[in-house]
Length: 318
Image (spheres, rainbow, N blue to C red):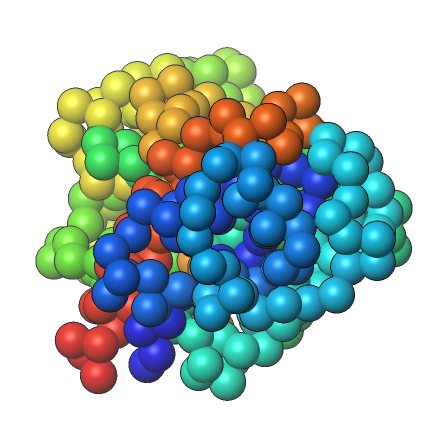
């Protein structure tokens, strides 16, 4: 497997170009040799100027054309949305071909993406479509808390419908396999309930008893160390305190809120069960500060570090 990390620049009007350049500039020459930024060189040069950094970017950039580049910072643009899609598409094809070992994505703007005619709910849905993957799960990873989601970018009403026994079981399996891959010999997993107090024996709904408990039982029968459903108002604290390595969250906000509270600047978004590896920053395009040279690249550094861990793990196994 290739040890090259491919960073997709994200929306050209957002902070993606700046955090990509800043991350590259902070690396040793050896680390830098394993980086390719999929983006637009003129835009990245504009970001470099805004940052006041002196570095030759050209050797590290897979330069893709963007009409009118560099585009104005901080503005919603279908041109930028289309460019962001093309950067990702090229990186995906290179990952499939083994040219790069992992993709690290800078933020895209979903509205710009859709204005350009690319109708996805975000990176994960796009990557699933581009790779023809049957499923992909969003895992948010920090040092003390890791969360994988049964569903993400759907309404709460739809999320409840999606918490079927089959889907919850598939999410448990995917999370267990990923943690084993990154070094956990026997991951301890907790499954969050969907209703308050897991429905209180049917008083507040029966989904936990009817849909989630059977999935946990099936996973345990397969030898997975999993408990649940556990009331969501306590399970994340217990995991953060060390009782569990991973929590299966039933929907977007249930998993995102605790992670954003404890690891807002460091949590990494990881796509699990795709045929290629992908990590990402866990923040948006920040149009309000784009081009000002003040965007924090700490989250990008964390995403790159996680990508290196995946690539190194595969190299050891290979």
